[in-house]
Length: 71
Image 1 (cartoon, rainbow, N blue to C red):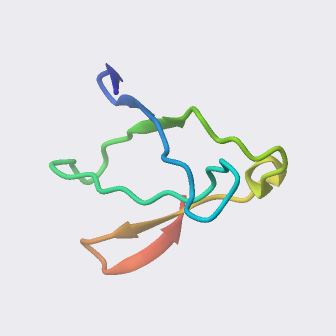
Image 2: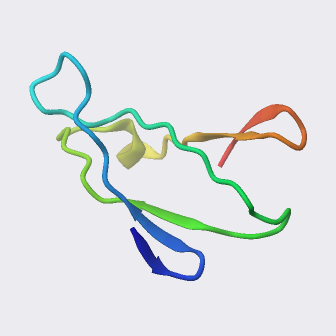
């Protein structure tokens, strides 16, 4: 959902074969510029203990370089 320029709320679907957990996500962003910053709020993680709380960071694939980088 669009919040304001450069910020979006993302609602995750429940993971397959779980008891309602949401921890995996995959999405695509297009029409961005090289130095543009976008904030994504993942608002419905449901697992009580996630490694993101301990500092784990997601990876982002940069099509321009063909590499995965930690955000």
